[in-house]
Image 1 (tube, rainbow, N blue to C red):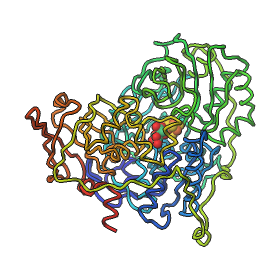
Image 2 (image 1 turned 180 degrees about the horizontal axis):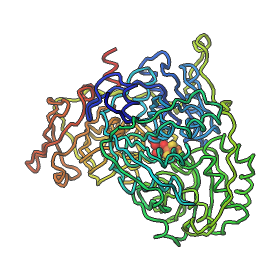
Image 3 (image 1 turned 180 degrees about the vertical axis):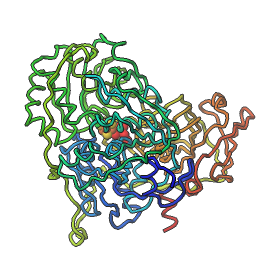
Length: 640
Ligand code: MIC
Ligand code: SF4
């Protein structure tokens, strides 16, 4: 028998169709799903539209964590819709205050050997316990909730062998940033990163979670860690020993590429403005004055992280020019911090304690001042994500963040010789803020609450035989889904209302785009890695609502490409990338769509230049059929 790496074992045990041949489409059975109050409304509306009577997974959970600022009725309406629909249709509902989906999932529901499909790109976090945890658009999650497989091309598996141990004050975040330094924001595209090697003995599950969390920033599908003694300990401490299964690669297993990292060589790192891939040693940029330090997010808000922060702050005061905010990742973490006295250390140092939620991480509060320098322990520093377009965001470890907050400038935490961090006191999982689904006999009589913020889903028609469209925007490389549809409290409140949210498409790049795009079919032209970052399907659904018919790019990020297909927008890849320069806004193009098929080479004509440009439709047969039908909802409705 061939030796298998752990990723292949996990895929094999969930395979519903296809073969494990790199590039071939495979179907995966999904055990668990997650979604939240930014993606979940759409996932739930689509689940209803698909006509599934009940959730068919082992467990599907909806979290309230992103959209917690209730400055109008909108968010509260969304929460009421999610709570009532979850209860009736068979899902769990994690209330506001319980924590960020990935932190709560890790603590309460993650299981070695299970598959998890989450309507959030950082679903990868659960790879820390040996779960096959993948982020996707809400429609794919809705389909999985109905018990149907999730499709993706069989990935290459990169093995990342870790040896040595981290020096004091160098942490998992620095390792996550080192992986980004090696691979960049597209080097892991469509791969799974599997971590192994002797150094794992010294990496706790929460440290692994930080690394798995940021794997998506390389473009990877997910990260996978073995389930070992550390995993057993993590689950047992929470009264979940029963969920443990040991998992590891076969001893002779091979990888499509091998990367070795000696942890002893790492130093504190920071990703500077405006990309997680812009990684530099902290020592090179130390001394930079900071205005704000924000500690939290699903990357670094564990109890161990925040106890370390408390130990650094204890007995000191932050200088007057620094604003320090701390957001614990879950109620478990918050309560334990309170019991350990760490909250008192935060308050005494001058920190502001934020709600247990995503908060500052996606622009819901704490926007820095104009040109303000903000050190953050989160995972993304895309332009404008903080709410301040000129904000200078640096992604760092909790140690670097806390020490810099005290110094008033970016500082290397290795200068701190010794800190006394107490052992985290973990208690068994408390699910009192998680509302279970109603029993079948009660569910029948329950009514789903639909306030005015819950708008009906738009419907789309099949593709025409010939596409005649205008170039509505030309863009560069690495366009993020935050560029396509910004985050932030104001826009997030419209996630259940496509007509309303569509007015913000490309808002920070060209606010006139929606108006122009509404005038008729459009095509956007871009460079490499189009659609990196967040899983928000609104970045495909809302442009389609405005009339966007195709995106012509050099290459696409995986989740966004799948979302484009789901909503019937053609993802076309330039055969000759340099021809991108021929496209200018306002040009008319035509494409013969009668030849749509897996891997088809289509001709994009620019009549004004008398030029024919070749573009590849690098999709499976199944996806080609979805595109022809005008998207997945239209396709499934036609089949029913
Ligand atoms: C993010 O970190 O960008 C988000 C906000 O969590 C998104 C989800 C969304 O925008 O709906 C993600 O990572 O998928
Ligand atoms: Fe929330 Fe930020 Fe994590 Fe996204 S990256 S799930 S916004 S904490």
